Image (tube, rainbow, N blue to C red):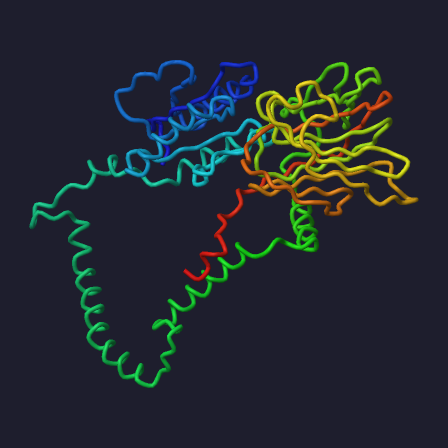
Length: 430
């Protein structure tokens, strides 16, 4: 329910330059609520003290900022507790950029505002969703007056006869059903593995199948190709190099119409990272095409703390064809952007072909601990990330002996759900 006396708290962050979009969305939502429903929301910038209030808020609408996740968790968890106690109507989260939310927020209404079209849709949908939520018990209490007859409320007077009828039916089923079950059960086989109820048997069988599927052996390359096709045939969450992701713009990293250019000079003998500063991704598919003029190019993903720790995958041109390399960098390993730094997780020469395409497409599908890498749509290898974390994505050009320019096109990003919990094989029969 939404009326002009609905109390709404809009929480946002404006502490860094990256939060400018968050601040703008918060103010835009505030004006929209008043214009459409005469709701006067309370604005709360998270670095400031919470505004004093004489009564609790009905709604918390949080404009998400990855830089303030710790503060957001505390605020959202407190609000969710009030929702569970039916003292608030709900919590909503607006994401100004493509990013993942904590898994424990899966039940929260989420609204993507990473594009202008999505912003308009977000404003409409928030008002729509706020109008179809049950009123908390605290708000209902004043309206449920006791009846002077028998001390019961009118609702109780209506329900009592119905409860009596239901109780009578249950009693009849119990009294008549038990002898019938015992009679029929005399003729039924009783192997030790058979459960006594058809319903329980179906449930248990389904559960066992789920466990077996989750804990099955490593998927085959054919399974990986099927997964690639299933994900990439869907509509991506992001296409192209948009301003919302804040790709680096400087002498060596620059957007040119619908493409993005990364350059590395011969004298550097290293790679030039170009990052999308407003991305925070953990479970995702990241696909991009690149045209390499010079030595090598590649992608960066799950980058944390300004490239202190990250993964990168590269393709190097050679007379033998393409050399594929996957590298993991931990803090202190890759500070100089030397191509030889970091731990090489995989390196292989891809088959040479006379019709080798000039434009090569890299795809990374990262979900939980598993990272699948593809070149031109063909599965290459699965890497295991022991501690998966959210991070930025990026691209780079690498110079080994000559100046290198890489033109990146056809960027696509799909945000994926967290992976299902795995069940160790040794627990199957327990």
